[in-house]
Image (tube, rainbow, N blue to C red; front, side):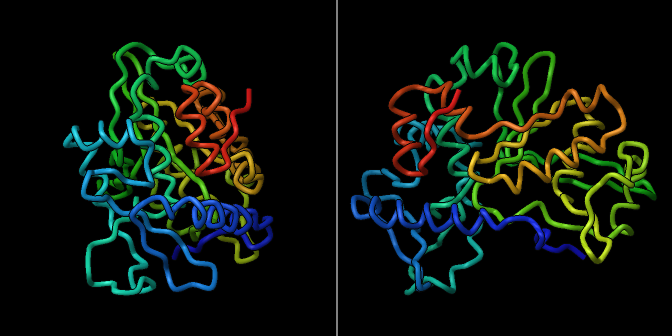
Length: 285
């Protein structure tokens, strides 16, 4: 059984969500959009008749529409349509929501010039000619000869390496899992010092998503990076505790936590302006 997060961690997710809602309630008046029926409404942007979409950096959105594989990612389902008036009038997508970490990720990495940035290449330790796959399903062996297919928000591959990326923005945490669930992974106990992994009062392991990401990175000899906002110390704390519980120094060296603010510092000025206006992500570093 999975649970959302550790109740003892500070709830900076709610504070950031309130900030982004307030920013976008002002910004959305210039774009096609809808509002949820909550006391503090959520903004869902929509594509207009000219194929503009307020939830995306415009040059990135044009490239997304021109790439069939990237465009398919836009169809990721939105699960809270019941909170939207006239909910049956059109199909809403998760990447329409103003707080979507996937939309933020695509606005950055699909933007022209992002992957040519020397500062970004250095930050992410990328080799030449990187290839992007959004929503990549990675394989993790399970007991009994079965596989778990966990999703990486972004996989970046080059000739000699693979980087798996998990993107977080206002999500509450990394989920929790009962010990029996993690016992299905044969590599779990050899990969982690399980006594050091954080748990909650029910003895469930915290950070199930990160644990699976790390198991996937180990199985595929890949690197793993968590992208999170500098305003989310709760996510940083939990990630570092899980990284520290990895047994092998070689695998630990392939695990990274990078903030959106650090990433923003490597990007073009127009894209930095978009991130600062829409998300309050000011470049650091």
